Length: 194
Ligand code: GRF
Image (cartoon, rainbow, N blue to C red):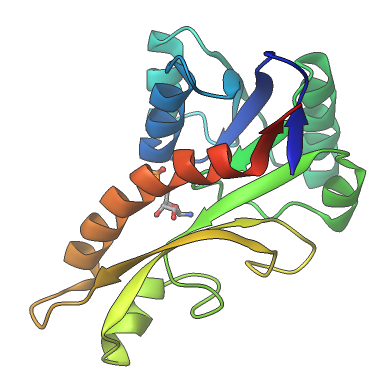
């Protein structure tokens, strides 16, 4: 649980590497009267990430981190997270693995969205694997981040039916629509007011 005090919203950062559709859906949620977050910061390791364009258009602070040196990159990210008083980090298509040290040192919470029904299909190529195994369903999962890849406590999952005609690309599109709806719900679920 992440706790917000009184009517205050908690400050949230979204880490991205690319397109940013989940960033968009988190931003939309943050603008709702009943939302429990301010979207205060976007961090990207990729200066060409489309999500950065969206962030700038919508006047969200957006910072690019040079990941040539992971240690320095993480130090810089910790500085930013402190500066913007971030209580919740949402990974949304962030293609870098955070070090154990970063995860342990971040006093608050880090969550991630993954395009499969965890614990099935950790890592990459989730849609390919679901189709190859002729699964009836795949879907998406929002989970807390711990030191092991895609293995933290699950917050919410959403099933998506597989169709005979599915290719990884077509399935990815349907799952992405489910992801964009699921992420705000999961954020809402883990923030309690007191
Ligand atoms: C999503 O499929 C997410 O599950 C995965 O990376 C993709 C990011 O998409 N971790 P977007 O950048 O939010 O559009």
